[in-house]
Image (cartoon, rainbow, N blue to C red; front, side):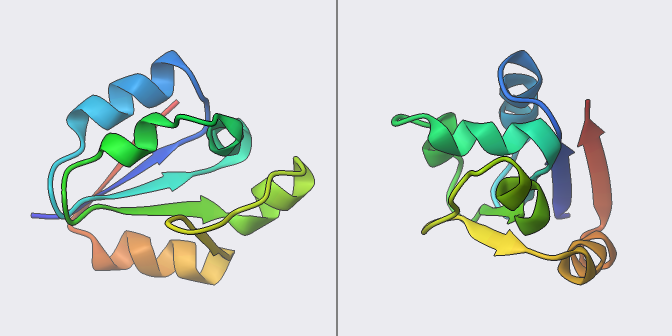
Length: 93
C-alpha cells in the first residue's frame, strides 16, 4: 500500500513525517518545507529504498530554492496525479 506524504514545514514536522515513510511511499515538500533542500546534509537522503521525493516547483521558485537530483520539481497537475495514484495521502502540518 503506497502513501503520499505531504509536508509544509521543515524541522520537527518534517522529522515526524519521515519517521512514518515506508518503502514505496512518496514525499512531497510544499510551502516552507522546500527549505529542507538548502541543508547540505538533508534527512531526505536517509529514506527507505523505493521512496520518491517531490517538490512543488512553484513553492521552490517563490522561495528561491533550486531543485536538483534526486528530487523532482512538479506542478499542480502532477500533484493531483500523485494523490490519485497513491492509496493514501497523509498531510503533515
